Structures are given as structure tokens and as C-alpha cells.
Length: 271
Ligand SMILES: [Zn+2]
Image (cartoon, rainbow, N blue to C red; front, top):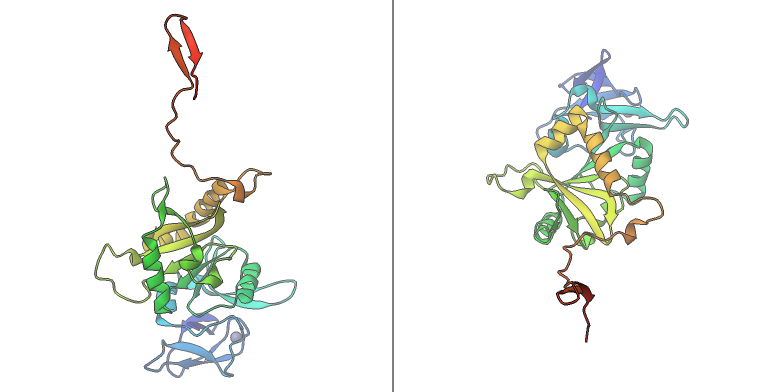
């Protein structure tokens, strides 16, 4: 964990410092070695939160974009007393979870149910094949009228399958902790898979990293994504599967012609 409570103040790990877990109140030890990112660790090997994953530099880079008060936010379900630590909880009540490790779909569902208003940012560089598969399939994304929004066919060939049925938006980060030299490299952006489908297509939005961070901080993300998803949901009684993607209308010849002798439109004969 990045923070422990020292004299009731969220404090980063320093050699020799004692702190307490904001989730379970047990004592934590500061780990300040050369290899792993400096962190706090429970004295027992197990973290009090079974959903907790060992932090990487990637996690830290992401968390550091947000105010300290929003990081490692402890949640408790008042009915069950179940407790978990969210990576980020914004003042706009949005939970952002940064996920590097593989996740079991059951755990993903449980976390989505527990936090409710949650979005995922997934490290797309964990497996080399995930990134190369995405870059290859990106060329086949179908542009829509909205800039940066794509229809994507065969989504299971684009993103790891454990994320495809998420009930909330999932943003893939294919840059990881790499410094990209080329400014036009598409990995500067995040790729957001929305939970709504249009016909057989999935919807993927290309979102500049800065815009994502900015709108999650100022709260616009919530309203913008809500409005966007609602605009895609068809009216009642019309299932999404029946929606058709708008295509250019084919040119059709007229069915009538103007007969000068008769002075009126006359139906064309078809042979
Ligand atoms: Zn704890």
C-alpha cells in the first residue's frame, strides 16, 4: 500500500516508520527496498483486502495523477461490514480501479457490485500478445460519425476475454510505463470499451490520457459517459440487438416519371 496512517495522517512509507492500515487498523511495516516501489506491508503476509494486488510502478504512476485524499480509499458495506480499499475514490463518487494482474470474472463482478459507480483502467502491457493483438486489430476499427468513437467487430480478438462482459466502462492502457518517443503513437491514448453493444458491434472510444484524467478529476467523466451510454440505449420494446447501424442510403431510381402529354406523374413500368 502507498499509504498508512501515522498519527492519523496518510503517510508514505519511510524506513523505520510505523503506521496503521486505514482498512483494518493493524500495524503496517514500511518496506523501502531497492527493487519494489516503496510501500507499506501488513505484518502477516496477507493483505486485509483479498482484492488487493501487489503494486507496480504502473499503479503508482496512475494513482499519482490524483490527490492523496482520493487514493486508497477504504469502503465499508454498512449491511455486511465487508471492507475494501479502492485505488481512487473521487469527490464525485467515482471509483477508479487500476488493474495489472489477470482477474477472475467472478471477482470482477463482485468488485463492480461492491463499488457500483466504478470504472477500470487495465494495464494492457502485462502480456505482450495483448498489446500486439490490439495494435493489429485497431486498423480494422470502423469509424463512426463521432470523432474517436469506433464500431468494433469480433471484440474477443481485440481485448482480453475476461474484460469483455464487464458491466462498466473498461479503459485499456497499452503504454504502460514506457516512454513513447513518437508523438503520434496511438498508445498515448486510452481505449475505452463501453458495455453497450450496437447490433453485433462493440463500441470503443479513443480517449487522450490527459482528457481522461482531467474529466475524472473535474467530474465531467460521469455525466459525459452517462449521457453517451443513454444515447445508445434504444427506446423500450426495441432490444439493442435489433438496432441497425446507419449506412448510407443506396441511390434508388424514382418510381414515377413526369408525362408531359398527361401533365402528371405516371408510375414507371418495371420489366
Ligand atoms: Zn489492513
